[in-house]
Length: 235
Image (cartoon, rainbow, N blue to C red; front, side, top):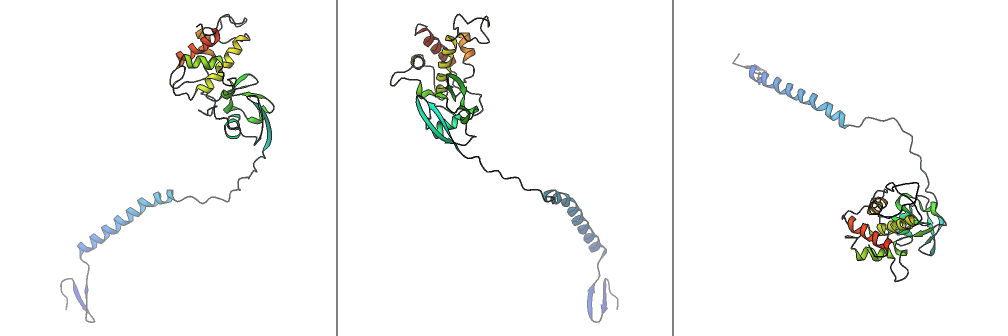
C-alpha cells in the first residue's frame, strides 16, 4: 500500500528522498566540488615540480696553507695561511694584533688602514700572500717603546676620538698623510697639481683623510690633531 514518501518492499521501509533533501544534497556536492577546484591550483603550486637529474656541483679541495713571511712592526712573522686569507684577518687572527679593526670589511670605512712599505692601504681588501716579504706597520707599531708618536700625542691632546673604534685606522692614515705631504705628494684640492703643495691646509687634511670615516663625528678635532702634529704642536 502506497503512503506519502514510503513504499513497502519485502517488509523493509525505505525513505524516498524528498525534493528538499535532493536540492540540499546537490548544493553541498556543488560547493565541495567548487572548493576542491579552487584549492587544487594552490596545492599544485606548493608541490615542487619534478626536476630532471642535475649534475652534482663540482667539489674543489681547499688550497693548502703556505708560509707567508711578514715583517710586522719590526718583528718577523712566518704565518701559515691559505691564499684567500686577507691581510686584515692575518693580522688579527694569526698574528694576534687586534689593534687593526674590522669595520665594514669592504674598504669603505678605513678602520682597517695599515701601512705596507710605508704606504697606507685598506687591509680588508688585499690578500696576505700578496704582501709576502713586505714591511707592515699597524697601530701597535707607531709608538717607539713607551714613547708615543707625534700624531698619537696630538690625537690625545686634541681629543680626536670618541668611541675609538676608527682611531687605529685614523692614526695610520694620518701618519701616512704627513709622510706623503713631506714628500711633496699633491691631492685633488692642491692649488697646482704640477707643484708640491706649499701648506698643509685644513682643506688638504680633510681631503687626504677622507677615506677614514668617524661615525662619532670627531672630524674637527681630527683635523686639528693632524695640523698640530704637522706644525709641531704650534697649530
